[in-house]
Length: 163
Image 1 (cartoon, rainbow, N blue to C red):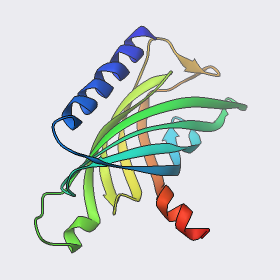
Image 2 (cartoon, rainbow, N blue to C red):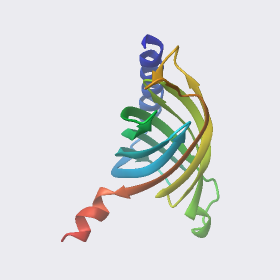
Image 3 (spheres, one colour):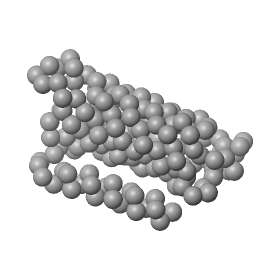
């Protein structure tokens, strides 16, 4: 558990230190999605999006993975950090998609991931999860292929819908 905490602290400090060099804009998002990690999980949480320009975007998030493992309902907390990249200049259409690199961690596994995102709103990522020690979820080992499909809804959009 200590290694997980240390990794999260180092990752957060890295992203926060890169953001102190320039003025970044922050946007809040609500996330809902699907995660496959040796089992199917629904995901509900939030993310903070940091950007200075639209070529490189940083996102930090926290969510809860909810699903059934060995016929028992289970909830896992999840932290994630992502970098969205698109270096096409002065072409708006190409900024409709971004390449995504990042990592996610729970109290059971850590998973580096890569993928694509459409407008930063719909993410499709894949990676490989490495278990933390002997951690199991209701007796099920959480390692192997990791696939995520996530919808990120900006809170500004939610606010404008109910005006």
